[in-house]
Image 1 (cartoon, rainbow, N blue to C red):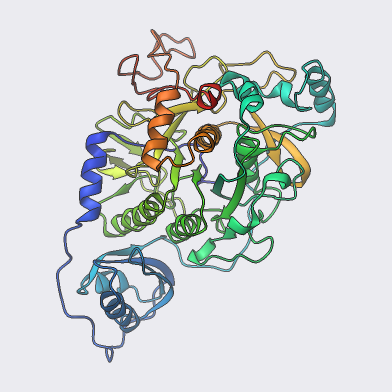
Image 2: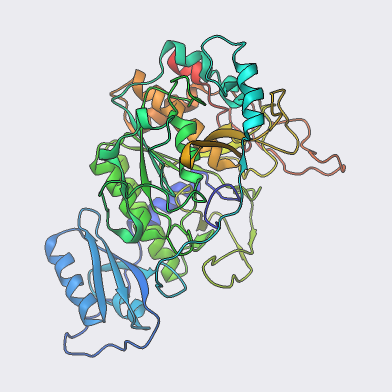
Length: 510
């Protein structure tokens, strides 16, 4: 699936955050024109696309006037998020975007996809590395030698590397803290997830409207395993069944945002997820994806600008309501503090066009949005994973994400990736910054459990304070060909590979 962090993704520096905040908070006004007359007949012979329309104000008069203009321009309102001034719209008018951007009261507006809305269907995401019965027996035998371990914990090098196994004995986390997994859905029937799952804080947000009916948050098929794997890394229960999460005492919820037809994470679904999480008392969200269809959203493009604006409004709303948002940095091994990056993958819902972008002007959403904690990935040796995106002043913290090439653990399976829960009661290995972010989210949940009154900003500071920074390596020639595979800039306290350091669950609870 093209949207998930197990492939690639990104983040950003303080000067960029400031400029991003300014540009989003005070986007230049579109040519101020009168609203289209209701009697005008908009063309309706184009593809039926989804749009986000972002208003200049959240007052009822402005939203009401814009809503009328949407209808006059041939748009159908799917849902209105009045508190943040975001309206999700469907329209087959090929000129809808241009028409609505000219309306007084509209800050930004644009299509959220490059292909028409189509009927639902499922696609194969590819095979994961599942733990076989024979491998499981070997791991269980090794785990049995360690008192109080979960049956498959001997393969969980990641827990030991950040002291999560020891932290659980001191403080496994509070039942008053919930981490929402915004992802492909969570299989709450898995025996390691069922004890900690919060159905009341779960939903299906696909299309922009939250569906809270029973089971709506579950993955479409077993191939949509990503969210279930992430959930287990955060809060798999210590119940003597399989694996353990970083914070096995907290609650976890699932907010599904993956499109059933192509598996992509469209903006309107993510906007819904952030608002739903905030309105349902979620303390932390984990975001192991980028918002499709653009790997980087450039503000000089009206559609991409509207996407950044809409998702940023939603995540800032969640932050103001007390929710800390964490996101994976990406798997492209891009330097997000560089002058230029070649993007060969966007858009990912239609034939991509190669373009060169400036990561200080074009943003990976949501990880590069202000206030979102950006997480890079490490392996068992506490070295940056070969695929992990990085950037001085961009990465906030690092966490175990796995490395199957260069960092192989001395575990029963000798698998450098991360073992966690899979749909239908199974277990499997995955790697990526998708796996790093939930480790950091688990540590954030432990910190929130210990400091229940901490604000999102304070939690982010605590995350950075408890982290251990190994500093930039003398050499990062992973494949031994004599060429540096990536250049780490910065010092021992903060640098481009690890940000403020690798999370430490044991320090968090102490």
